[in-house]
Amino acid sequence: MTVRSAPDRLLAVLAAFDHDHPALSLTDISRRAGLSLTTAHRLVGALSEWGALERDASGTYHVGLRLWEVAALAPRGLALRQIALPYLEDLYEATHQNVQMAVRDGDEVVYIEWISGHSAVGVHIRVGARWPLHATGVGLALLAYSDAASQEAYCARPLVAFTPHTITDPAILRRVLAEVRRSGVAVSSRQVTEDALSVAAPVRNADGSVVAAASVVVPERDAQVPALIPAVRLAALGISRALGWQPRASGG
Amino acid sequence: MTVRSAPDRLLAVLAAFDHDHPALSLTDISRRAGLSLTTAHRLVGALSEWGALERDASGTYHVGLRLWEVAALAPRGLALRQIALPYLEDLYEATHQNVQMAVRDGDEVVYIEWISGHSAVGVHIRVGARWPLHATGVGLALLAYSDAASQEAYCARPLVAFTPHTITDPAILRRVLAEVRRSGVAVSSRQVTEDALSVAAPVRNADGSVVAAASVVVPERDAQVPALIPAVRLAALGISRALGWQPRASGG
Image 1: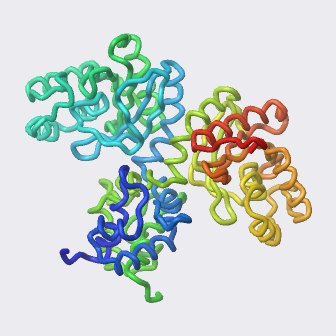
Image 2: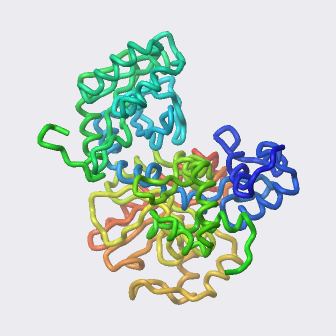
Image 3: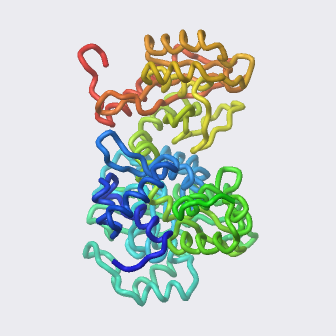
């Protein structure tokens, strides 16, 4: 066990919780955070008193409502989602397909909203899920509008394949990104699972930076891509306007 | 400045952020958390490195995406909201009114979902907002199904009035709570603002405990309460079933 600062130890307790471990005993927390049981007990006590953790009747700890309230202030999390939700609902109304929004964090997308449509595809995304940029529609849209150095760095790293259709050739990825910038829309077909296709468009903020992407995911087999493109673009433009973006004379 | 433990100081930095203060400079954080600038600088550094805070180009700090990801695991926050969202969307579809879901935290409700309807009322709720139990429909629904001791304690405390219609008489509140238990639905008319009425119903989990309430808020002037009641009850029952609740032969 390495020597760690007090903040690091407290944050290690929070980091012990993840999607596969949403409920932990004190012993679990101690083991996963790499802390002695005594230290874990003290830190869990402080976090519980504050409301960052909640203890249920069986003595198991969960993430608490107070932490959720603070986290709701994250501009790239719930705050962005709250502005976007009416437009995502309209997109769902118009398509009745799976609708989602994601932001970039490093080399991954993080889904901050997911509305389940009536058509089932093999992609099971949840809010908070992460996925590499090159496989998903939202990821391609976010990567295409990041700066050239960041794109080149991403193309230079190993590109993991999830299906035989996942782009793994950097030269092809560069061409796809150029096409996304030209058309303003990203289409990812069977790159995540064999049965799914996604259409994504960039969301801009007041200064024109691409801060998120909105998309629909549909079964690839009967995907009506030409009909989905304007719907996704309109939703993304609506969210962008709500964030203060204004199209320039050149078209933004 | 009192002597505080290391966890308390770190949590004070997080608590410096609230709805009225979602973006803070290092000086703001130091002042609001009651910490020296040196200590605030060190703690903000640790929180930023971990991703709990994010620093924008102007040097201002916001709540970060990483904290939001951990908080998304809160069973009473995003996790519950994720299960409930399809039913809340259906309720919105059926009514086109403001739809919300809330949980109880102490003597208050905390809104964990809010879908804005087409009709404007003077109530401006946001996700994460808090409101006293006795004024709101969701609060009355949550209070009515809490244990007798907790209800009596609440009735014994001062009941703040927000309009001339807010219940402030404990005897009336007790009668209203009994009526909520009898009918399975709570109606709050002009108790929060002069123009709004809400209809709320309890949401139960697998063991039958009431863990949340769903509601619609409509303009009081032309509220069709008899038509709203079955819609809200059905949505709340749907969420309850999705949480594993099963009606007993007696009717649950």
